[in-house]
Length: 286
Ligand code: FAD
Image (tube, rainbow, N blue to C red):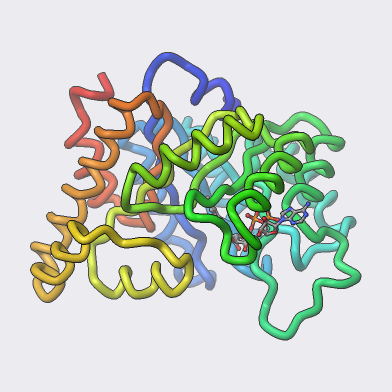
C-alpha cells in the first residue's frame, strides 16, 4: 500500500522505525526486532539507510521481509554517495521486490568531501530521479527547527518547495520535543505553498545518552519540562524509560488532538518501547 493512501485516510496513523544492522552477525536480532514491532500492527514501518550506503542490502532485505509478513515498509534511500547507475539499479531491485514507498534523502556529506561533481547534490535530485523512474510513492525529510545547513527558515522552506515540486508526496519531520515548534513550522510551510501532509517524527527518549547524541546531531531545542525529567530520572534507567515513554505519548496525543493525523515513532529497534506507546494509545487509535 502507498504511504500517501495511509496518511491521507480518516484514521490517525502510527508508524515505527527500525535501522539496519551493520554486520551479518547482527542481522537476525534486527530482523527479530522489526517483526516484533510489526506484530503491533503499525500503519507502516520505515527502514533507515546506513550512512554511506554500505548496508543498503540489509535495508532492502528487512523491508522485503516486513512486506512478506504483511506490513507496509517505507525504504529510506540516500543519494550523496551514489552514482546514477547505482540508484537506477536500486530502484529496479526495489520494484522487483514489490516495495512501493521510498523516503528520498540526501544523506550527510562526510567532513572533507567536496559537494562538487556529485551525481545527486540534494534530495530533490533523487526525488526527481525516482519520480521519472515511476511507480513509487515518494516522501522526504523536513526539519521543524531548520536543517543545520540552511541559511535561515525561509531558505529551508524554499528547498522543501523544490522537493515537493520534484515529486515528494509527504514529509516526515526530524524529531522535536515541543509541539509548538511543529505547529509554527507547518503554518510557515503552508503559507509558502508547501501543502503536502506532514508526518510528525517523535523520539521516545529512554536514556540520557540519547539526549546528548540527539542534540549534537540535530541541534534540537529541549524544553525545560523535558530537561527537568532528564535531570531527575537520568540516573535511573527504568524511571527514565517510563518518563521518556510518557513524554512521547503526551506529545502524540496533543498532535492528534490538534489535527496532525500521522505520527512516526523513532522506535530504534526497541519493540518494548514501541509496544508501550501503542498500548498507551489503544483507545485513541481504535
Ligand atoms: P536535502 O533536502 O537535500 O537538504 C539538505 C540541505 O540542502 C538543507 O539545508 C536544504 O535546505 C538545502 N537544500 C535542499 N535543496 C536545495 C536546493 N535545491 N537549493 C539549495 N539548497 C537546497 N540519513 C541517512 O543517512 N539515512 C537515513 O535513513 C536517514 N533518514 C532520515 C529520516 C528523516 C525523517 C530525517 C529528518 C533525516 C534522515 N536522515 C537520514 C538524515 C539526512 O540524510 C540528513 O539530515 C541530511 O543532512 C539531509 O538530508 P535531506 O534529505 O533533508 O537533504
